[in-house]
Length: 141
Image 1 (cartoon, rainbow, N blue to C red):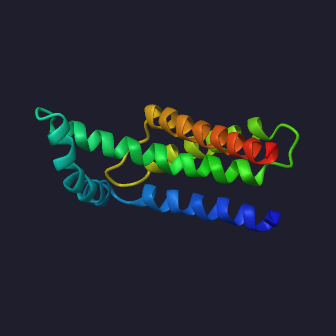
Image 2: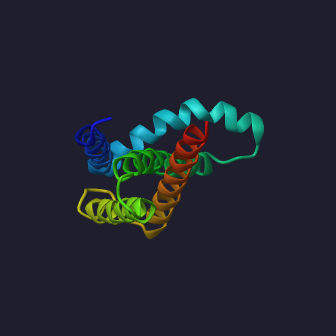
């Protein structure tokens, strides 16, 4: 894949993350509640005493993990030609996660949270690791 296409995908995904982060607290809650309502029967079947608050938190934090997991895959793919691409990829994802949380401080009804940066970093790390694992597996064949 051409290098500019790889970076286009990275920036397009970053824009998607930015758009989610730009939702007001009310809109973000509505988006979360849509998924919570879909997932609630599954969770209450597994754990009958689970609270709606815990399901909501799980859905919201899983969204963080997933968005940054994909970012890690894309950034890993885009930086592959760099000598220390693992470190560069992780650094790009970390800086973006930090700026994303800072951005949320300025959005109505939202706040920046350090724990979200850690979740984002874990998601990115898993994405980068799996990208490398699949890449090596493909090369070995």
